[in-house]
Length: 353
Ligand code: MRU
Image (tube, rainbow, N blue to C red; front, top):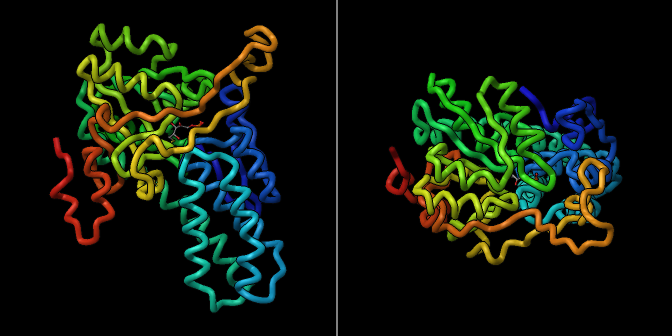
């Protein structure tokens, strides 16, 4: 299985996704700034994967800290946490991972600093391992929505490369295949960074899933021709009312799906759900450099100096989402907020086919 990020020999090893699919190259990060830079420059991307990389970066930074007390140790880690969170604002997973690492430290505040350093490495590795299990559970819940012979449209890359492994949106597809269903995927190329063309097709071909690449603006025409049975996408941040932030263009896919009577599913690990925000309007949307739009692999395709809008993500309102598939089951968007109600019986609100 392809690994986007790993802890190897006290370094953070990152598969350089900016070079895929033409070259498979790894970057061994020896300090947290190097990891932060790979996140900022999309060498590693995808919400869960950047959360894992940030957790490992924090563990790496901790190894060089000299502190004589818990409070001093935490104080020294705070700027590192802030730097990592600032690398990419839309995906909530970095914040989620930092909260989890800090919570673990607080639970162990009586331990000595050298022990805390080891615990940070352990916790970061646990976040990676758990993410793979979470994705497999999403796969099992999600596969119920895929029938033998279906064609699934996906946008961007929410596969193994965007996670610890197995992927979120790709997990139901992989499980459906394991169940013996004959399925086909249509991958939007996903301008401007082309995660669909470069990464999703590469991954799915390796997994033996028939995949067809389309330009982003072909999705509506194919839906109208009856060639798409369902859509499954990932998410960078889903919020309490079920609104979903994902790669720019997801909103258009969702609206087209509704217009054509096609179900639109979002695969969302709980680490991507921000229960603190009531509506999608409050999600910070990352704006990226204009060169991502005006250049393709360094080649200029638009006039020098042209004005550019380059929002990396958009928000799909909950009304366009058929179900949100988590590791705990699939739910209607309006029920997502109930997942954190203490004592709730999830099977009462779960969607079953
Ligand atoms: O800018 P990216 O490539 O990090 O954006 C990634 C996406 O939008 C994915 O679809 C999303 O993170 C889900 S990843 C499981």
